[in-house]
Length: 174
Image (cartoon, rainbow, N blue to C red):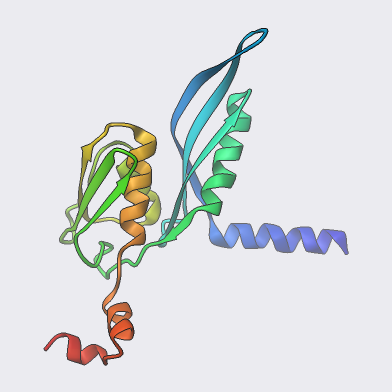
């Protein structure tokens, strides 16, 4: 009985097919009574390349532990991304996280992911294939990744807007 449960759990994890990418690993110190205590901070982006992505941070005394915690945190903070047929975003959007701002615009098929640093990682793991993005303000990878996730979470599709307004989709184009 226990084996059957374990197999089901493994199958579910294979179906969702999560990918994880480490954006940054930092050695951080805390000054305590006995001296300095070293630990590691890992920024991890988790996504399934089919419209779900999350940014997580993990801290531990070793790198592997920090990455594991980061992955778990990323899965807790997942964002749904509505993708168009061209694997782009439905409309231009801005996002903010800390001192970082991110501007994103949809792009035509064949453009590719034009973005830098942590924003590029977030977009690739979200499954976006054609997009223009620019980091503004801070260069901090954690804040930029959070700003990108914030921008992607505020995206809306035509059907979402029509539903909110209580109007049939056909009437939106008029």
